[in-house]
Length: 182
Image 1 (cartoon, one colour):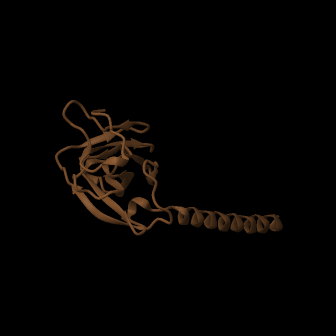
Image 2 (cartoon, rainbow, N blue to C red):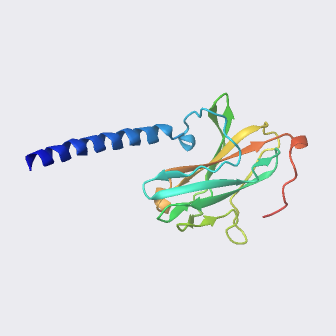
Image 3 (tube, rainbow, N blue to C red):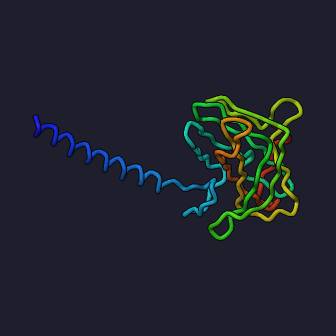
């Protein structure tokens, strides 16, 4: 009996060590894109990245993925977690320059609270008068950008997780016209 218990203990430690190594490898492979870390490769406009924190999990979508300066980008929020996700119309835009994200435009809107139930994608339109969108300046330089949105489990805790959606700004001769309204 003592031999069997020792064998189980040794096997248990081996499994625990393997699980710890696997966890470190998985965590090391996360890009941390929405948290300001440098990425190894240039971000791809329109690529959907799911960010997670505990039971919260979501993705942000930029519509359209490629546009010219002075146009409007719309933002949709997708909840892929198991609890409701709350957020507002606030956002930040960063530009990808020399392998790093640099701060750019931002808008803080405290008066509007929005949400998405688990498994739902909401926005960019929330009723007839509320649209989650960003008016890009006409003099915005071409390049790779991302919009960031803070979300959370309640309207008071919207900074618990940051979602990001990447898009590209091209000069007027390199972009197809976007639909007037969606």
